[in-house]
Length: 366
Image (cartoon, rainbow, N blue to C red; front, side, top):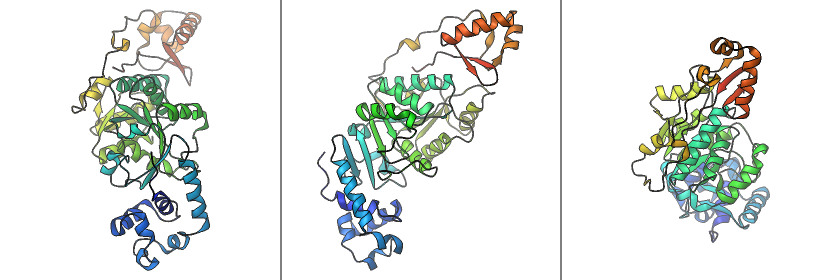
């Protein structure tokens, strides 16, 4: 991509402390492109910008930050996309507060493709991660790009599922694009940069801070036609993403779970509020009638699972302890523990805190 000749001016505005996105949009609306904004007198700009921001607009720290950003953008696969660029995502122009510019690393063309957000708890259950992976892979098989936030748990599982197919994935960061958070996802971030795309509105070097992530969440939903919440507690940041999606006119989907699981309560709350209950990726695709599903194909996960027998047959779908299983199955604690270990190694059962166990269903991605 050929850099915008006025990119330094865009960066100067966006990297000036105290000059927020709203003020920048006001300046652009009043005066035109950043080069025209910067040519105006400080008295004219003072109608739209705080005096403290104008005092540092031409400062050495701002010039240094602009130079660092231009150096970063000069590297292969690095992009800075402004509101004036044809490559700026059209979907973000539909939201109330689009960022003046985006930093991107990877396959820039993914920002123009049809996408669905898949989000959920950082402290996900094994079943939740399996669902996120299967749904994301099926949606990616259908040609949709999966958008998420690179967090642990559901986000990471969604990215991995999407990377396994054609639609690929977009990771929207709550840090500068050169900062990986959490560090445990460094390898995943590198894979997304190579096969998907990383996106951030924050300046280079911005570290993780609590107030950045709600802003990040509006971009996750803004880039997407719909938002699927896989697993979420009532206080989960995923519900912020879902609310942003609803406010932006996007579809909201939620996967139901056990009434006893705290990680299901957020999804159940969304469903009570009007989110669409989904049990398979096909349920999501059915709500996107304008989406051409020519790429969608059934997978082995669509085949009916064989009937369970033995201990699985009496476990049910909610967490259960060993004593209850002994009673239901008529087995000794030793026999139940031995069978649970076998099922856990086979990926059919997950051990939970508090001595509880839960069966893992085969996720119905398609």
